[in-house]
Structure formats: structure tokens, C-alpha cells
Length: 373
Image 1 (cartoon, rainbow, N blue to C red):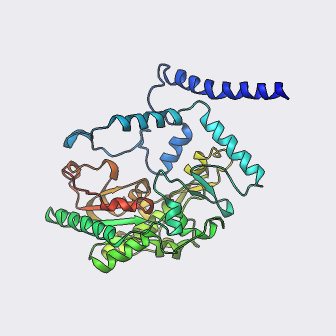
Image 2 (cartoon, rainbow, N blue to C red):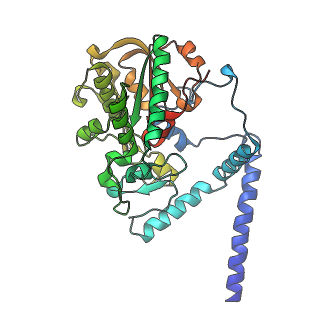
Image 3 (tube, rainbow, N blue to C red):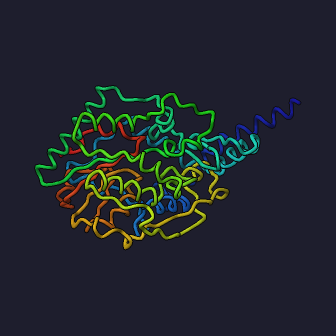
């Protein structure tokens, strides 16, 4: 018994000491510096419209044009360094996959152990992170805004609209519901909802009642179409291009008074074995390559909805597909990450229309000043 315990202790010490050393050695080899994307990660980004034709990750193009990047504190650098080290830990993906498969096996496939991924009913996966928004809190309805917080959002968005209107630019806002809200029937029974009204829906109601802003929260449109076709990926946290089309048509209905039904356009099937971000993070991409990738045929767009205008779409990861849908309806479309947006981009793109979009899990950022010169 003592020998067994001794060998277990030795094996454990080797594991926790050697793994970081191998990580350091691997990351200091020539050609290993910097953050590299795996082929699986590139595929996830590409399917969400975040990779350019030359294979580069598409992010905002702002930066030093208006005073450079904000100063990074020593503590922030330390946090970033620790995060990069953990993310680059040798064998990390395999360890995550092993842990996930083990918990799945022990629970008969009803549960997986993951800090970011939650397995629901009908093999549908959900995002349970608390480091990238709090989508489960949104679903449970336990993080509602105060009236003061919503008033601050209303004031910020109204001031932005007035500023852009003075420059001859139309300004609209969109908040895309989290997947958990639309496919609540597939959420595990262990996650109880305290309030069926999420904070995205709460914010939309407040802005509609207290402002004349065009603020689109397309929950009702998504719910009305979810039985026709799959609107969000089963294995990914994002809507697919079909869901993006429904979202944009709800925008057109609200902003322009026009609308096209889902059945009136064409979506081409590009793949049937896609594994999305959620199963990739859980180390299950090889087991759950079960999603279908649909691509919008912009030539099928209703020509009567076409706007001979330049659109600057500023948003988050949902913006990849949404901006692709927009290419069927505007003369020029540009997409920028909201985190990287710079005031100078207005002069660079000279847009007629700006759509400011955030996924529901980020909707508190509507209170942050947008037009920082």
C-alpha cells in the first residue's frame, strides 16, 4: 500500500512539474512564438465569417489611428501572460477531451464536465461561461438591469444617434438573443429559470417605451421561425446564416417597414459535418461533427429591399454572418468588431448607415461610449 501511494505521488509530481516545463520549451522554439490557431479553431472562425479569403483572422482595423492602443497595466500584462500560458499548456486539448469523455461516460452521456460548455437535450450544446458574458444568468433571468442602468444605455445610444444624424448617417441598434433563450426546451432541467424575461428583452421593452430609438431584439421572429429550419448551430453558440437572415429581416421590418419570408430565399448547403465552438472547447469536435453549414445566396434577395447605401456593421462574433446577409441588400458592407471600433473608421468607410449590434450576453456594453475621438 505504501509503495503504491509513493508511486502515485511521484507520478502526480511528474505530471504537474513536467507539463509546464514542456509548455515553456515548446513555446520558445523558433516559429512557436505568438498565439497560433489550430485547424479546428480556424474552421470555427471561418464558418462564422471571421476569417478572410487569405486565411487571416478578421478583426477590427482600428488601433493607432486615434491615439493608439490604451495603456496596459502591469497587472493586466500578468493576467494576459497567465492566460496565454494556460491556453498554450502542452496537451491541454487532449486533457480537456479526456475529462469531458470520462464524465460523459460515467453519467451515461447526460452530462459533460466543462467550464464553458453545457450539454442539453437532443445533443444541443450551450455556452455556460462566466468569463465571456454570463449567458446562463441571462437565461435564468437573474441579472436584470436597474432602471438607472437602462436610462444610461438609452442616453448613450440616443446621443450617438444624434451625433451621427448630424453627419448624415443613419444609426440603428440590434441585440441578438442568446441561443439559450431561443432553444430553452433543450436546456437541462437542472437549470431553472427564475424569470422568463431576460435582460435583453427587458432592455428592448424599456427602450421601446421610453425612447424613439430603433432597437431590434428579434426574439419573436426567431421563435416564429425556429420550427421551419435550424436557426442556431447545435454544437456552436452562434446562429447560423438562416438565423442571421431572420434577424436581419426583423431589422428591415423595424427600420424600413419591409420584410421577406424565410421561404423566399435560397441557402446552399456547404457542409454537413461541422463541429462548432462549443464542442471544440470541450474537446469533442471529433465526436460531434454533426452540424450543417448553410450559406445565404445573396442573388435570391428581394431586389425591392435593396438599399444603394454603404453599411458599416459594428458588432461581435454574430456580426460575421449578419454582415454576410447584408451584402445582399446594400451596395457596400463593412464589418468591424465593436471592441476595436475607432472614430476614424467613419471617415475611412464613409457609411450611410451604421448598425451597432451586440449579442445579449454583452448587452450591458450598450452603455459604453461609442464615439470616442
